Amino acid sequence: MGLLKRNISPYDGILFRSAVRSKNGSPAFATMRSFAMRFKGILRGGQSDPLGAWIDSAIESNIIPIMRLARTCTETSMLCGTP
Image (cartoon, one colour):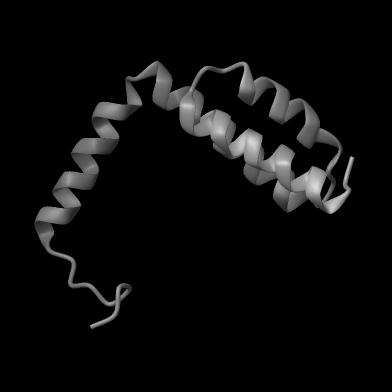
C-alpha cells in the first residue's frame, strides 16, 4: 500500500480537530499561519517582488521552521541568479 493510500479512522479526525482547537489559541501558531498564507499568496501571485520583504520578516521572526524556509529561498534565488 502506498503512502497516500492510508485508511483514515474516526480517531484521526478527532486528533486533527483537537490539534486545531489547541493551536488556534497559540500566538506562535497564528504567526506561522500568517507567514504561510503570505507565502502562498506570493507564490500564487506570480510576482517575486514581495518575496524579499517576506524573507526579511521571516528571518526576523525567530520561528525556526519559517527561518529555515526563508534561508532556503534566499539560497535558491542566489543559485538561480534571481535577485
